[in-house]
Image (tube, rainbow, N blue to C red; front, side):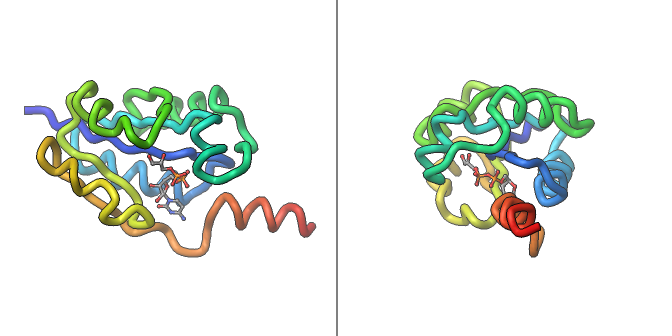
Length: 131
Ligand code: C2G
C-alpha cells in the first residue's frame, strides 16, 4: 500500500534546511503533501509578514522534485482535518515542534526530524541586512 507523508511550514526565503527536511520527509513514504502557511498564519505565528507571499512560497515548494502536492495551511488548529483530508499516514515536522502534535498519533505516525544546524530564514534576513 502506498504511504502518504504530510508536512507543514512557511518555507520563506527557501533554503537548504527546508530542502533537506522535505527530502527526508519524502523518503518516509511514497507521496509527499506539503501545507504551506498562509501569510495571515505566519503573521500570527511570527509577528511579521513573510518576505515571499504565500503564492510565491507555494509555487516554489510545488516545483520541487520530492513534492507531489501543496495546499495553503490556514490554521495550526486544523492539523487533524488536513491529515485526514489528505489521507496522510505520517505527519513529519522539524524537531523545533517536538511533542506539539503527538495528539495526532491516533490517526497517523508522528515523526519529528532534526533541523539542519546553523541555517534559518531569520539568520539569512539578518545577514543580508548587515551587508
Ligand atoms: N527546518 C529545518 N532546518 C532548518 C530550518 C527549518 O529542518 N535549519 C524545517 C523546520 O523544522 C520545518 C520546515 O523546515 O519542519 C519549515 O520551517 P519553517 O518555514 O520555519 O516552518 P514553520 O514556520 O515552523 O511552520 O504547522 C506548523 C507550521 O506551519 C510550521
